[in-house]
Image 1 (cartoon, rainbow, N blue to C red):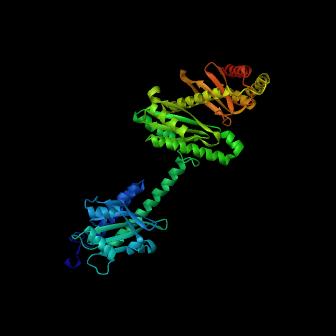
Image 2: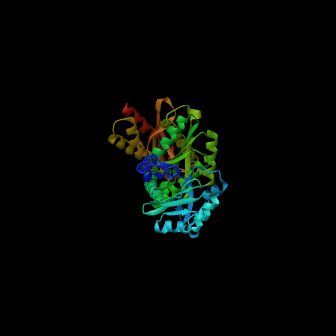
Image 3: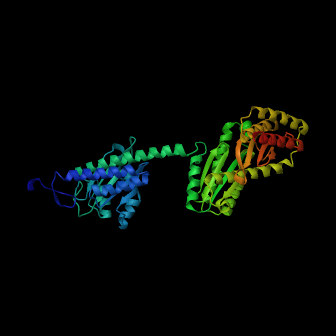
Amino acid sequence: MSGMSARDTEGRVVDPLVAPVAGVVELAAAGHRLEMAREVDDVAVIAAESALEILGASSAALCRIAQDTCRTIAAAPPSRDVREVLFTQGSLRAEQRPALRALISDRASWRADVTDPLSDAVEVGTLRDVGGTSALGVPVVVNGAVWGQVTATRRAEGRPFGERDVAAAEVLAGLVAGAIARVDLEGQVRHLVADDPLTGLGNRRIADSAADHALASGQETCIVMCDVDGLKRVNDELGHDVGDDLLRSVGDVLRRITEELPGSTAGRIGGDEFCVVTMGHHRADVQEVVSRIVAEFPLPHGAAISYGLASTAVTGAVPARTLFRRADAAQYRAKRARARLRQLSLPPQADPAVTAERMLVYGTAALGRASAGVVARLCAVAAGAADVLGGGEWSVLGRLDGGEPAVVARGGSPADLGSDAVLVEGAYGTWSVGVGASSTAATGDAVTTALQALVAVAVLGAA
């Protein structure tokens, strides 16, 4: 049996029938670990640690290759040798390293040994610089292109790397490539599912998840609900492509807000509705950042952002849905206040009596077609009134569970309440309706009274 003996990487005598099995077991373990990786950084660490173990190396690394430049992204074990740290943390250019150049162009693995006169002189020089005696590198090929390389180094106490070591490293590189491709694909899927394709912000699901996480932390949680004033006008006058650009501008503003509030999340809820969820920031600080950023970065085409804030410091421990609702109500109040200021400088151009009569006719007809239920009836009234007033946007609010008024339904196309429109409101009991009106529509007492009468009929008729 002595004639069939072999030595491992540490020079120990082993049975040659057992040694390959050990390598297979270690590769299988590496494969299982790589299956659990969810980020490229995780893959890199596992790759370096696995190469160290499988190859019996003194050090190992996974390197990223891009634009003919090789950079180490994970190494094992962490080195305290200044020479090795400088080598592994620097960037290597293919034009200066023949072995790296061949790996990129021909996907050729390489070996270097300080005692072998045929080894690449550049790699041998590097080995001597870091106190090594043998090294290897194998390509990591992802989706048909060289993504990086797995490298390993041995010092004087280990034997030089051989063909079996290169073969084992190539198998490991294949496992690493598969893990990187999977992680990259999963990241693309997460991006498609989680992000709003127009603005690049998170979608409603991401915003809800961020709110749940923030509330579970026990820290002060704030939700800022935002609305775009002027989107309908921009779409109508300049086209939907310009409107899309406007929404992207809103996304840029919200990203600036999150940059100043670490740990916050910005999302597009839908249409022209956006939100920012913060965790661990005092509401006064959030208010200051939002108001300052909105003022410093105005939207193009005369559009503007209306926003409202709700905080657990005021509401106490409440579900995320309640906090979103409170923020939405605050945003609605802010928009309404702006509309009232605008209304003072925009005298109605239509006859209030004629407008009130038309509203009663439209509203009564809408109630006749409406489904049962107070919300459905109020929505019908609001939509009919919006048609008469030409503002487009309308909202139904109710005091739920005796709390503050909250938006329970909204519709129409957002009107530019900040520049060329005003708001008409009608209320009865715990319910109210707000309707955007164009600057040319009559909004006097007669119109308001007509809307209030329709709201009362809608509520009483649903009882």
